Length: 193
Image (cartoon, rainbow, N blue to C red; front, side):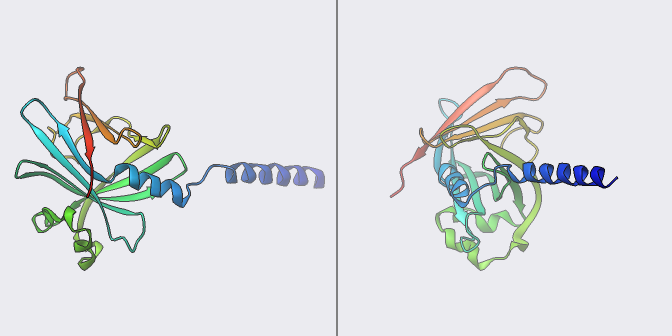
């Protein structure tokens, strides 16, 4: 009986050792995710329509955790969200996507990242979660996700996002609801001053 207890203890100990060997994220993984996503992207929807996507770090005293995202078409604001980065492993980063309770207060504030320092997390509303997977050379992409949290596409569409650091581009694939046709868009990161 004593021998069985020792064998069981050794087996449980080996399992816990295997669990600890799972790769954990490092601060560099999170910094790299930030560097890859943040910036201003020009996305061509069609020949006459351009969308500008701004991804800016905010609440920087809470390092590498928060991003403000705003999409505009001309003078119209299509989307305003706050991303909370929650790394899970060196290959998976969970992102909570928050609505803003009073989005009009924050229009255009992507250009002033310190603006958010005057506010607490109480400005955040409902949230959904998306996982980004690091595939290679600091390329991050999602699985196909339903659009509900992203109001600039029709409700029910499926979307796939991919950010490629080496190319300084983002790619969006869209499958409209009740269709099998995939529509692709890509955005090029604009140089910063």
